[in-house]
Image (cartoon, rainbow, N blue to C red; front, side, top):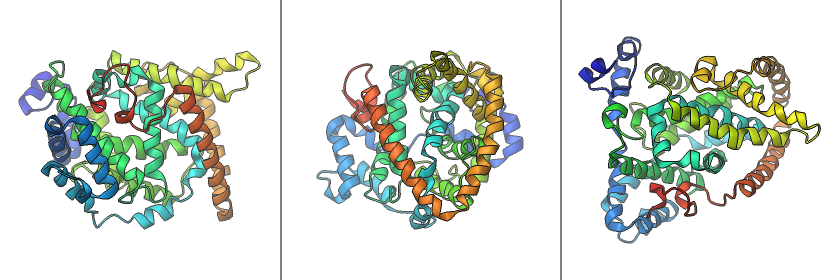
Length: 409
């Protein structure tokens, strides 16, 4: 493996490169080259933080998001270049259609929360190089609950109607996520512990693109598995929404998936060539399970009899195995849970038929969406109280704990 990757200019942790080239042709070349690229526009702006000061630079960014770049006094050329790209909406974006066709997805709020924790977030930990920035910033082991809430805050805002309009909160949060990535990338590039030859550029284009798989393809599939399938138009809207989100996050057009088929292709090459799971990947999964997912399932179970609480770990493990498959679950050290796995696999299709019947009754969609929104608000307040989280993203998190590049000095 090492000789092959060294000879072809790949990060040394890449596996099955020849097979990837045979299966994916020119797209494999594009994908491998993307491991050496970050986000030139956001990286250039972050390079100016030393002169501007971290706090001032972030205030400029927020002002540009809320009021436009011309409202930013003394805006550096790097910020103007970034917003020249952000302000130009591609001609393939139809936000009216996206909002219309996804207006009622909130009816599945309960199920989407399960899928976020046990599928979307966990799936990203099956790649030791992609997970390395989390390890080196200490963000997840510091507080799995806080980071899960941060991710959830972003997803709620970008998924609501109008959330991706130019001055909407979802737009601003996405731009801040992009700059947070650039801040982490800058910090790790200068860290002697970052093994560039082995891992490529921190938060490289190839792994950044996989973010769309984590939060679109995998959730669509996961919702179906637990009996909450989206309508066809809602699925199409999800892929369109995340294509635009990928654009806002700075993903290169050559990598940006346009639809389900292209997301599946990206997932396949990612899984084929990913570095092996390491101890830290397993620690990440253990952390989100023990600190967040298991306690959350326990909270949903009756307090008595007490033995019911012992069902929480196998329920979490069963869900993860349904979402990820046994091979990746084994690598990540997720305990076998054959009974709950079989139960979920059997119950999912039954619930899917029930929900599909309800979905065909158009008059049920809006009342169910309102119920889902009330549940979401109640759960958000409960989780924020439980984990003492009042901010949205890590750049606004309070000082304390391990330093993070997005917080500044």
